[in-house]
Length: 79
Image (cartoon, rainbow, N blue to C red):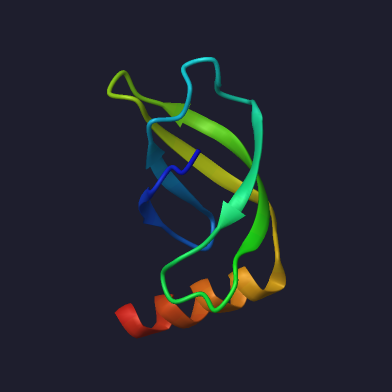
């Protein structure tokens, strides 16, 4: 399944629509794609909060270097 991010940072991201079975403290693996990536990169993240609206906050635990570099570049453009 694909879950688009609502926002992101070098520390994690906010997404909607994850299965209700995921709880705070759970680990999730996935792929970051889009936002200018020439290729996708894998991540491991922890669910750090969950809202009744279905939004979930993830904290990156592992992030491929290419993804970190791209997020850093994009972040610099927003300043």
